[in-house]
Amino acid sequence: MQSKFSLSLSACILIIMTTLAGADNYSNSELKKATAARHSQMQMIAYHTGLLSEMAKGSTAYNADLATAAAENLATVASMKRITLWLIGSEQGAIAKSRAKSEIWSDSIGFEKTALAFEAASNAMIIAAGQNVDTLRTAMSSIGKSCQSCHESYRGPKN
Image 1: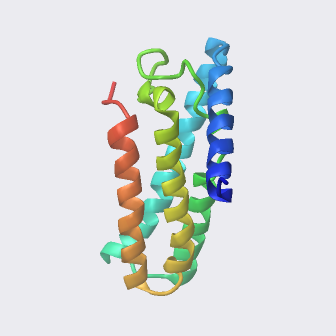
Image 2 (image 1 turned 30 degrees about the vertical axis):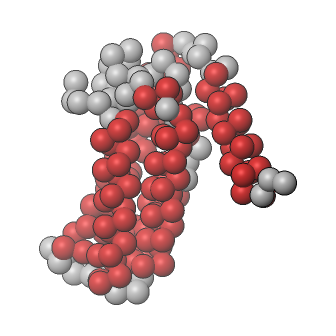
Image 3 (image 1 turned 120 degrees about the vertical axis):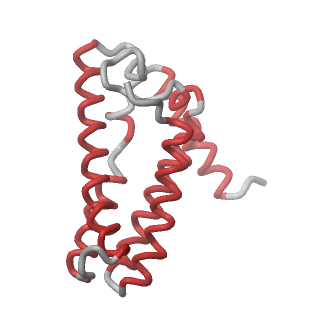
């Protein structure tokens, strides 16, 4: 008898694979728009992690309200549905300014795992950010590790 977890994991994998397998008929205009939206998402992530990082490093005074707001915004941006942003055909070399490696689609399960790890780290940051600067620093480590993991595996070099 399969556990609920393995059934849920199997269902998620099936949904991801079905979505990615049938989603390769996008126009160049749609691919460019998705890539631009992805870049905007990354800018929002960079902005909010920057606010949190400055407080964690001590280069800006710790402010619990600002840290919590930045963490909430970060978690919101991290939870955006990837199906609208990561379109097949928008990889590096196919669309100008895209740094998305083709491994995003060839290893869609691995990519999804890294995205979910970032979501989890972002959600944990909401609680940590408002407590004190020490918990913020600890949570920033998890954010940094999840960003690094994704970028090392799925982001290509600068164009």
